Length: 138
Image (cartoon, rainbow, N blue to C red; front, side):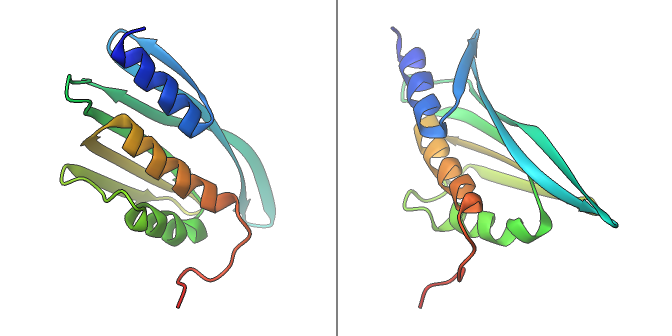
């Protein structure tokens, strides 16, 4: 097993998802279920998360990308846990947020080891499944 396959296997375990290698790109196959409020009705849906890493280098770094759909009320908690994760965001990190009426698209990209990206992203996603409590601990 080469280094890319080992990293893909580790990322899959961290994200609790399957990974598929296509050439030099690793696609993480993960879904997220949401209930989107729309006027007088709530619409349940399951969305594919768009998570990948490519341009894997010998030093272990790669170009990591993720597009995550969030409910507006989830954005502060998700962003807080990305920023406050014990592994700091790399210097080569970008994020874009676009908002619709009932859903937010959080698009992120970084250059770092895929394992670091996966750990941080998995932790932020896991907090969305937890029962809401105080965001900041005194």
